[in-house]
Length: 241
Image (cartoon, rainbow, N blue to C red; front, side, top):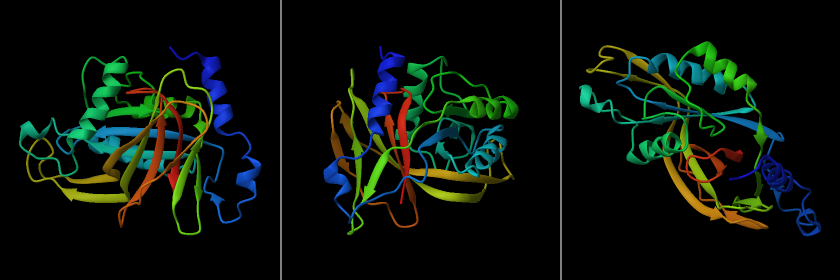
């Protein structure tokens, strides 16, 4: 079990000053605009009656400069007459990892996860908003850009257990979709920052390490998440330029 002392040590070391070698490399630029960030993830479905309001709440969160807001489409409402247009099995797998690591007994929607925390947050806009405001920000991951546009993630610190590095690509901003059947039949549903692809890049076992990040698909934005194992809390995160 990771102690709070070791967590603080990892996060402090991950944001220590760059080495002399790094500082002497003028062709690289650090992309982080601030030292800390909060991450709000929403597991949502086009067939879920409460999800339209949750989607709008996520869009509200996304207006804040220090919040990375991500929506994951899940497919278990498809049995009620409408196939979700954004859902992918790997998104359900991510939600299941949170459920297995935390308080919830099963997957559900809308399901907010804040900074990877395992607490079960039943949907209530005021409650979720208060929980986000009370959440402790996490360090912004150190990502550098070379002259050729290549992005590299740098990590350092001790790890008692491996941390997972995830690259998440999403369609930025608001999209609307007409729902023709199912529980939300007739609704023109608003979506925000819908995830379109997720890739586990590597496990980080501690020490100084660098990871070359993949290119982002045209029309999408991307973030990198460093996570304390499956369904664990987020150790750091960053938007990718």
